[in-house]
Image (cartoon, rainbow, N blue to C red):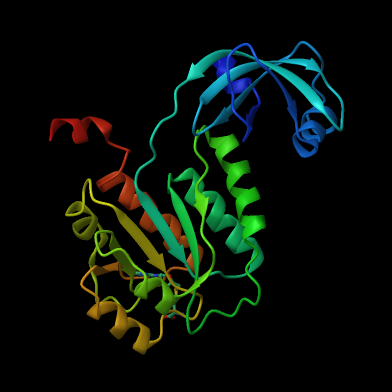
Length: 253
Ligand code: SAH
């Protein structure tokens, strides 16, 4: 990434992006560019989506309600994300926002809130999650936005699970294998990481999980981590051991 690219504002645009075409941005994005970032006509931003890639876009007419841009040069093609999902038990609002942001930065392709026996949170606001994911993708240089799944009860998620995808269950009781070992064996497979709520998983839930052939229990070391720390730790180790933090090693295989 050169300095020019770093400084440019990145905006997720859901409508098709084609070189040479003009586009009217929705009110929220127009407000952001006009009132928050104070951009002016003639400036360049970059717009992206997972289907078309990323483009330099020229601001033709800026207005707080509707901003018109011209799509110019394509600067990046769409890139597939690591096939890694996160299933997490929602916690308090700020910590949940943090989880969505960090999971996006750490490259997950889908995020599913799961309601477990000890999940305390009342309503799960997936529209809020989606907005957080878009903001995080804009900041971190991702081209795709993680998909946000509808909230599921843990047993529903397990009943409808595609058994070809491994489900790594973060077990705070220490009965799982070390994360490096577990993830190392799963390179190039579809996978998901499951983390629990502040109160942890119930014994019954742990028993049900361990009986599923697609579940692998994983330990994140000798200390009990907070739910949001466990998400970051698990996804980071996954990316380092089995994901896209070591592209060269992947190619050697
Ligand atoms: N209150 C529980 C801890 C819950 S921590 C207790 O005291 O036992 C919240 C979640 O983070 C857990 O459900 C688990 O998914 C994950 N987690 C925390 N520390 C972990 C560890 N050392 N190994 C694996 N998972 C861990």
